[in-house]
Amino acid sequence: AQSVTQLGSHVSVSEGALVLLRCNYSSSVPPYLFWYVQYPNQGLQLLLKYTSAATLVKGINGFEAEFKKSETSFHLTKPSAHMSDAAEYFCAVSGGSNYKLTFGKGTLLTVNP
Amino acid sequence: DAGVIQSPRHEVTEMGQEVTLRCKPISGHDYLFWYRQTMMRGLELLIYFNNNVPIDDSGMPEDRFSAKMPNASFSTLKIQPSEPRDSAVYFCASSLSGGQGKTQYFGPGTRLLVL
Image (cartoon, rainbow over all chains, first blue to last red; front, side, top):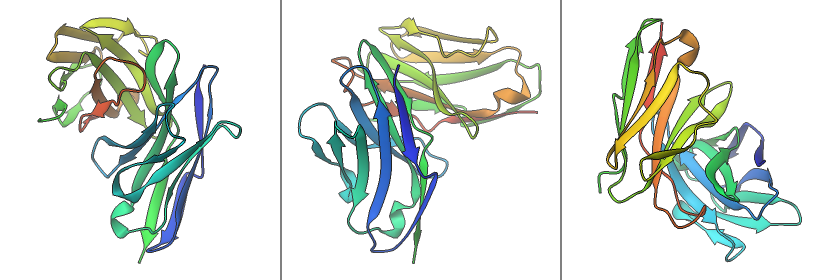
């Protein structure tokens, strides 16, 4: 079985500040890890994914994440927050013989001017 | 590409009525997924198909829910009879085959309210 824990259901930062959204996973097989973003009243859009290549993954809109196997973590970062980053962010895991994505509960990011 | 298309975008119905949600995956994608999103339970996978065949329906909450994929470009999720606790946003997603690392592309969702 696989699971994802996102620490902090709500994160608030100032515009220009570092964004750090935390994700820890549990998987009995080598995992594939994803970060999705959801803007209000929209579907989910892929930010980035880890598929066993480079452990530091760069995504869209200046986001990146680092896969740390020893810590079972895949935290999402962005050096400087922009107002347009305000959204809900979901970490997800898949792996093994099943194609299903298991999502975390999500973290709502608020960016203050 | 038009992306994943879902209809209707919003649905309001009364308890006991039948509800049918529709999805058109991205052309060429051979995996299709149905998810439900609620405040209490977050995003849950209900069922997924590969080449129009249901592979895993373990997430379907009960017999009132059914899903079909009659061809590669169309899928339905039906709830009969509907109940207020079915109120949620239902997402359809599609992906290419080739491994679990393939990206799932999500539609805009159907917001269902059962009164």
